[in-house]
Image (cartoon, rainbow, N blue to C red; front, side, top):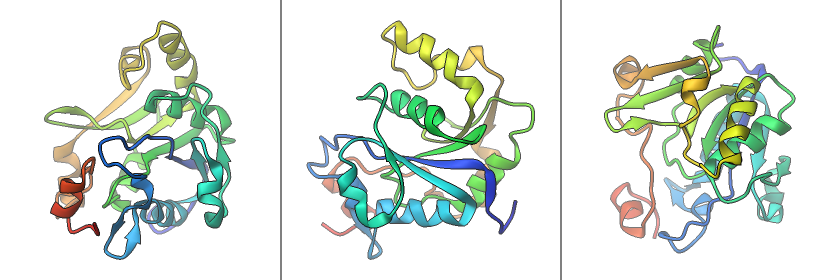
Length: 198
């Protein structure tokens, strides 16, 4: 898959977050002169022939020319994942949140290449899973729906019910020389720390 675009995986970007701690829409924060949403869209368009945004207020993203679908279960990243899987026309999706300053193409391609025989391929670091930069198949739909029906919106409590490939960060470290692939910004202070525009 190196250097090519996959037509059997859909890139899904979650754009429904409330950005409460940041105080403004994180998708449109700027790092290095580009918005966070643009950084992820550009990466996904290099990797996938299909890219889909999931969230409300679709008019915010009119200029991007990408389809936007509403959350079926609004208010959580798990609901966003379910919505992306439900609307995707491919068996697999690669999920990312819209607020990653440094999404890593090499890691995307590595995780996608590891999907054979698995329902999900998810990075795992010392503190736990990174479910918002991971690959999922439609076989996750029923376990997620069953979990949501119980009122549990944890992003990974259904993992024991699927064939999971947990990818330790040690396996990805050589692909992430700056060690910033999973950096997340939630506050104005964190944005300034990574060189973002206030």
